[in-house]
Length: 568
Image 1: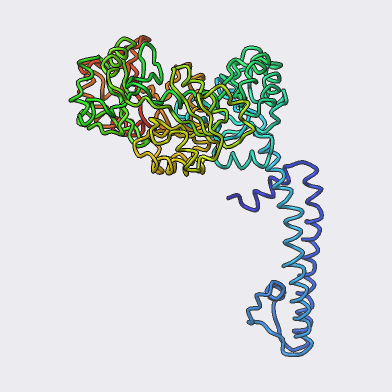
Image 2: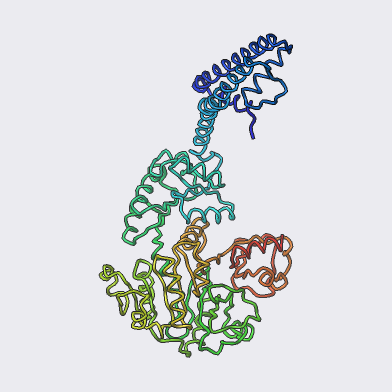
């Protein structure tokens, strides 16, 4: 905390305006001193009239104690005249010391000082230090921005959010968020924020505002990469014409990623991502000989060459321990080459998982994108939508459309909930998705439920409701932008599961992958090793770990933290 002296020093150093504002307060203090001296002189006169003798300082002391209402009672008058004088001193002290003085101090001293400090902070917030480069500028403070900042910080990349409201910008800074104060459509804002030396600018406002942001940034720099988020697919071309380097239609991507996790028709491995020459795929074990076996007993690595990286079960990705027993709700995630995944499909294709139509509840942008992705895989789709106004947009996408409320048992029965292999809940209302998750699980305990989450904070609640897989708008936005910033391939394994590049700890140098026991000790699954700029993806248990190499691993943020703790 600063002392009063330092406050006054900063005020006096603040220029002529602050000194002029301070002058009335100084005059009042001098008046107050004069009143105290007057009361001290009158104190001596009355005391002498009563026959009492006190020092001059005692008079000052008595005047201050009475005016401040302390009134210790060690010095008192014995006559009515003295008592009347004491009353006058007391009342004037209440007005002068307890009312006027605090008001003038706040009005003429503290408020100008606070304004000066705020102005200084605002000036500091209006620019990024010149020594900072390779940073990321985020145009709107939203859930994607907050999580992206945390993710980039782990990777050692600085990121700043642009906030037009100065007061909000200061509150964000107090919360530890890097922020730049300025209008998101002003060239001066991006010039002060160092856009020309930035690694990337993220335009995450509405589609119309994003086009303005892109043109504004391009006025300053033609080369800085600009990533724009698009709410509707029709805006993609406009944003690209405006000058965006990448345009991300997040609702469409969300629907397509949810569709990747659909299991329907004959049992087969659904490819959900790619890393260099490796494919990531998930496959069901229900109604297959793999049911009830441990991962070791499946012998998939020996038969097909694929490696099980983890097992989804009731919304959680479990580490691929060799003694993990596969249940009817288990959905393993396999990693292998295209040929190895095809060999896995050849083994599974003879088993009929469930030939019935997939049910999508919600015909919005996400639901329609998921339906289109499933139709491209020749999977039969039924859709339930309660808003008849969306019928023209939905027409022709699903095989059958059922207009009605999904909370109506009759509507879901007609749509085939009892036999559906998978249900996709794609409404934008998280509370409704939670409700429908519980409802659909009750109507069909064996169905696989994939749920969209609008807000990341509701992911855990949706999982507790019984969803097998949850993907949030925030998560897919952060993962996609992060992969572009880092120049890495997008690997989307689900909510809370990320791809990490981990420098090899010195304690593991010279050991084999089996001796390191990374999976057993941390839960992370190492899928590749980067050595001398080359990516080794076909890892063996006896793979030697060399100093200076980088591990590529799948897992959660908690597992990454565990890795850093275990291997220091």
